[in-house]
Length: 171
Image (cartoon, rainbow, N blue to C red; front, side):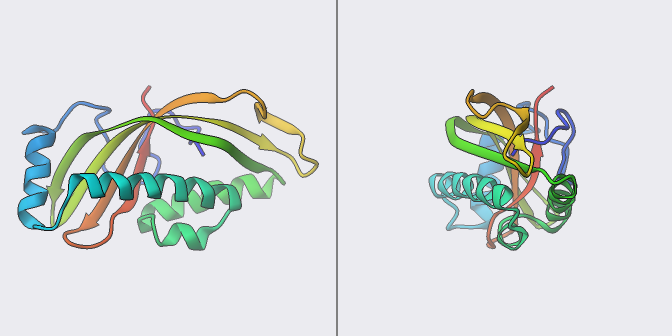
């Protein structure tokens, strides 16, 4: 899924700087996270974050709020639930097919009040469209993939599981 709001943080987390590193940069932020959690591993984080990306997309298409609950922070979950309810109330469904990540990179990493944050820039493509109950496309294309870039911010209390806390699209 892609939020229709292109520049705001749509999930209630901290504003993402769209690739401009925070003070000290990514390496300093990852170093801080590693010092507080001796088991933190950047490669493992990337694998987990990509898994969350695909699981959020799959849960979104199914409208599975329960699956989202385990991988999305509470404020973000409420925003997603509202968006899902709005689509469903119109008798529509968002289809996402052929989802593929073309590139990913950490753009921010920091700690704040006992919470770790890492933002990934994700370049992806998918066939993404809205259909009505009969299956007719009302928005997007069911045949042409779209390329998109999003910034996904993941958060966790130190030592706990990562959850999606924000999605932002560059303007």
